[in-house]
Structures are given as structure tokens and as C-alpha cells.
Image 1 (cartoon, protein in one colour):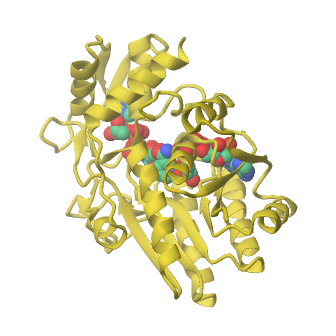
Image 2 (cartoon, rainbow, N blue to C red; image 1 turned 180 degrees about the horizontal axis):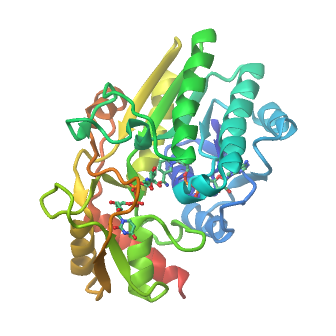
Length: 339
Ligand code: NAD
Ligand code: UD1
């Protein structure tokens, strides 16, 4: 019997890579996506990687009738909930769209899971829930949460609170909030990857777009921070490693007999500066990159990286790919898009 896993937002960046990992591990993903932030090229990419037609249902996860029809048809073992808006700057300009989609979507999915007696749930959370960590820059799941700096960040913060409250009232639920650090890279085949809409905000898409000539110059946002080279430090996690973490999370939930709620950091455990990313890109690809130092970006966290030991202990997951793999795969994907 097929082991169906509903993947909301499965046509998106992280969702599509997770679909690949699920299939590779014997699950049958059911993608729910209305393509509001996905490109159909990804579906062709998925077909080519999987050598099979993925199951896709086009619809809005905020629509209760849509979820009724899916849960009734597939009786999924678990839901992995990616579908949400994710652009920090846009969320500042259009907060209501973010609260509407990210919060209503989550509430609707949880409501329907309860109605259909589906217990296993994996939620896309973010290291943004830690805000700017006080003191130690390596954060564990026990590190105090701080208020985020954008409506987007609040949707993850409140999302975790909603999940906590729903769990308190429904202790049979088995839930993992995966707190992603900075997802980067693309599938090694370069057939799926990230599609930034408009001018990218995130570092690596800006690097590859500059290298290919879609952007004129990359600006490093601040080089006078209290870090070894003066630029901000993040934990960049390869998207294929991140995808595998979801499979491990689902495996873990399936093994457990009683309810649980766990927050788990998904990162490499290593901090990398903006300049180190640029250096790695130039060294690995041999491409000349046009870049300059510029002013700090408002709201930037100076330094944060994961303590990822809980993921290893609980899920048996740890990152395997490196920054070099990520810059190479992101560059191959950028070149593929430009063909
Ligand atoms: P993405 O935009 O590439 O994927 C999200 C997908 O959800 C898209 O395909 C979009 O079309 C779909 N979607 C959105 N709203 C929908 C709706 N109402 N109904 C149906 N489909 C809908 O984003 P991503 O980078 O893959 O991120 C996935 C999740 O991970 C998001 O929840 C995001 O907030 C979270 N996250 C992402 C990052 C990151 O840097 N990419 C970091 C931390 C957390
Ligand atoms: C940003 C969001 C965060 C979100 C994450 C994933 C902010 C303040 N934070 O995190 O909430 O979860 O994206 O989508 O926006 N950089 C440059 N030049 C650029 C782009 C980025 O120097 O053109 C630097 C940034 O200053 C930062 C690093 O690169 O130091 C990474 O930036 P980015 O990819 O935007 O991720 P975050 O800031 O970690």
C-alpha cells in the first residue's frame, strides 16, 4: 500500500527537493500547491529526476473543501506543511497577506488534520524565531526565543505558538517544528532549484544572478560587524540535506506510538560569513564576481548558527553537503535557468 505524505507547497523550493527525498525513501508524496510562488519548470524537473509523474493537486490550502477532498482520497500518514509566503521585505509592505496566508493556511491544515484523524505533522519553521541571539551565537532549541523583526518572522513565531496550543489540547498529535537555518543550493542534477521572484533578497541567489549578469553588482551589507572579517555570519544548509531532514522527521513520527511536540534545528552547526560565501563561489566556479562593500541592511542579525546535535540524536540526521557543494549546485541551476 502506498505511504502517502501530503506535502503542502510541494512545488516550491524546499518542497520540491523534499518530494525527491520522500520518493527515494519509499514514500508517495502528494503535492498540494496553487503555483502562486512556484514555476512549472519544477514539475518537469521532478518528472526527469523521479522518472515518474508526481502526484500534484492544484489548489489553495486555505480552502477547507480542497483539503477535505485530498485527505478523504489519500488518508495520508503525515502532512509536511511548507505552503506559506516567505519574503521578509514583502511581508513588511503587505503584512495582511502574510498573516492571511501563513496563519490561515496553518490553522486550516491543523483543523482538517484533526477532523480526519491525521496525527503526524512537520512544520516549516525558521531560525528567525531566535531573533538576534543574546550572548552565545550557536543556538540550541532551548535558546530563548526573541521577537522577530518582520511580519514574516511573526508568522513563524505565532505558527509555533498555535501548534503548541493545538498540541496542548490534542496530546495524541505528533509534531515536529523544523527550524531551518539558511537553505541554499539546488538539486545536484540542476533540474530543480530556487526561483526568486523579482530581485532576490537572499544572498546566494543574488550571487549567482550577479555572476550570470542578471544583476549588475552584489553589495555586501556591512563589513564593520564584530565578526572576524566584519561581515555577518549564518548557517547555510544545503537544500538536499534539508530535504532529507524531513524524511527523517516523518520516519521518527511514524515510529512513535504516543503524542509529541519537538522543535528541531536544521543547520550544519557551522557559521559562514558573507565574504566566505563569495570566496567559496569564486574559487569553486572560477567565475569573476562583481561585488562591493555597502551599508548594513536594517534588521540583520549579526551572527547565528545552529547547534544541530538534537537533530542527530533524535532523528539520526546530520548535514553531509558543504558550502562548496551548495555554491556549485546553485551555479549549475542558475546556468540551467538561463539556457
Ligand atoms: P517557496 O515559496 O519556494 O515554496 C512555497 C510553496 O507554497 C510555493 O510553491 C507556493 O506556490 C506554495 N503556496 C503558498 N501559499 C499557498 C497556498 N495558500 N495554497 C497552495 N500553495 C501555496 O518557499 P520555500 O523556500 O520552499 O519555503 C518553504 C517553507 O519553508 C515556507 O513555509 C517558508 O516560510 C519556510 N522557510 C523557508 C526558508 C528559506 O530561506 N527558503 C527559511 C526558513 C523557513
Ligand atoms: C533572511 C531573513 C530571515 C529569513 C531568511 C530566509 C532578514 C533580516 N532575515 O535571513 O528572516 O528566515 O532570510 O529567507 O531579512 N546579504 C548581502 N547582500 C545581499 C543579500 C544578503 O550581504 O545582497 C547578506 C545579509 O546581510 C546576511 C547574509 O547575506 O548577512 C544572508 O542574508 P539572507 O540570505 O537574506 O538571509 P538572512 O538574513 O539570514
